Image (cartoon, rainbow, N blue to C red; front, side):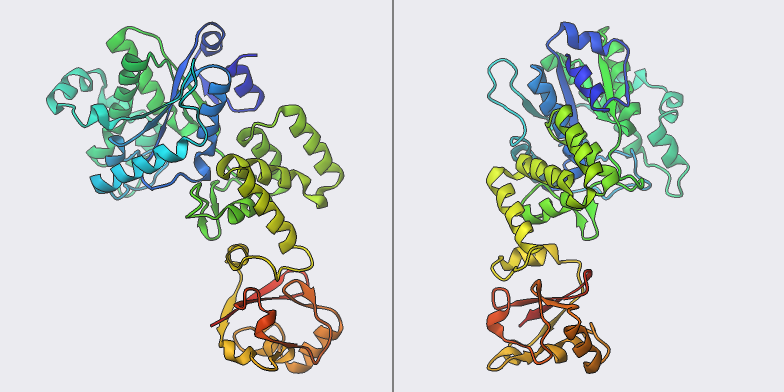
Length: 425
């Protein structure tokens, strides 16, 4: 089986140039994917591209991660409704260095026969002469040709239009392909389906300048079953940097994957063989409430990004968190999973000595899990109140600071779903 077969079997081929499968059958292929240095970390929306390079390397080909230190100063109009704010050069360079380190977790740069490479396109774009670029590259692109590109055409129809800066992006990315072909005999560019126009522009430029045939492959954009953009939670982006998104919160993001998405994500974003994925799919159909497929997804992806030990800790914390007792969990993990839950602050002094009555706590204006003390007592007696995941049924129950998680938190729950976080200050 070739690398192309692997991509096709995993439904990763949205479109590809003719003859690409034959190229993989007969040659050791150098292929590249571009990464945008607009932040100091990649997020989960980049995982499909990262995994594509890693799959190629496993099949013996040479992956190139092209970090856009040059094009990052311009900005890609693809998929954007307005021009983005241009970052200072120093910030772009800092982000490039961070991405270089992050990508090294997934790619083997010391392999003997097919080492991965990280290349910064500022190496050539930062030195380019404007007049020479217009003469040698610009003359090969007509304005009519560029206007046919979907990314440009869509922006022209928007209220803000498109600046000449972003209009020139297609030419710069096409020139990247020429440079990578010259330097590393790179014959393939891979991207998302929204990059097809940019990729074909590079293919055309290599043909015109070098009289050589190169290829492109685009993968489906990763979206949820509802069509929403992938890579964000209610609290924002899910980053690959543990300092920006903790391994525990990262694990929870995948654990919360819907039944309609989980098999596709396992197929696209992990190295599990397809037989294992099909087995998990059958298990999910037989017992969806067990969420074993989601657990496998969370375990696999967290291991890839943060390592086996971080994944083990995240899984263990998750089991404890939704088990009977969460009092022993780190405060940071509890805050991570309940960060979108309503919360309020109370003075720690209120919980000293004999503590604060649960009935009183439930009816506080900033908590309001019960409209009155009588209703709070009824909830307690009926078993509908939980504190730190333990059911509380005694109407006279009181909470002391020693009972708080880390001496700082109480997680209140009414019924099965209505949570509230109390922070002691």
